[in-house]
Image (cartoon, rainbow, N blue to C red; front, side, top):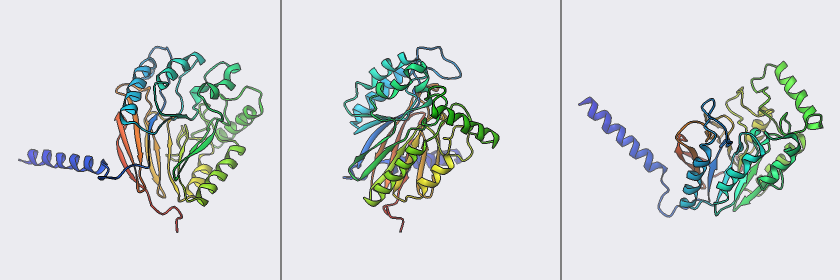
Amino acid sequence: MKKTIAITLSLLFWFAASFAMQPAAGDEPLLSFGIIADAQYCDCETANNRHYRESLAKLDEAVAEFEKRQVDMVVSLGDLIDRDYGSFQPALAKLARLSMPVYHVLGNHDFSVATDRLEEVPAVLGMESRYYANRMGNLRLIYLDGNDVSLFANAPGSTPYIRAEALIDSLKVAGAPNGKPWNGGLGDEQYRWLVSELESAAAANERVILFCHYPLFPVAEAHNLWGDERLRELILGYPNVMAYFNGHRHTGDYHLAQGVHFLNFKGMVESSPNAFAIVDVYADRLVVTGYGREASRSLSVSNDVTGK
């Protein structure tokens, strides 16, 4: 009897949760977009639970679902490839089948190419700038470059490379968990640009969603962006910010801080099944439909963009 009651309660909970994820009749999203993170394709043998060659089939599956749902756009959260410039073509060929635009942010593995090809990486992804923003109705979408200051996206001996060397040395001396060579940070110019974008969006009463490869949460985590505390404080100072979406940490993660949703999407390259998502943006919530290992969530947001 107890077992029957437990099963019944579980089913009721599942139906209630499923119903809560559904939009109300006539409730159309302001924007719908697909999300992929860390496909890390290369023609390489599986290693450390990373199934590199399988990523092409996983991209096929994601593309088919995005087309079926007819999302407005797709965002790749970085690390489309694992290594070698030649890996871009097969992965990009899969995304080329999409009938909607694809917006990229850059990841550390995207720069795992020969030094003389580093500057070609943004162009091969169709990016005019390594960081940028666009508007969709009353939404401002901001795409950050967390590799601005790093040891892998800049040629050895260059000014950004030397600055990255100094920064990682200081992080190591301070015992910072994210003082790792596979992380990076925002340069001063990009940071000033971001402040300008956030100020402009606030003045226009626009809601903001940020995309970056590197996480900001949990606090003191090994995969976090260099300068994570500074960026967290900046973002949390703007009540019109809805969310910060990232990849990099393949296990995924979620944190809510002062009404802002920090969601780390799971890495596609890791084991089976697949991992990708579709995000529907409503005035009062973000509905994340997860596929494979990615969880589905309904994330409430405030309608007050002023914080007053």
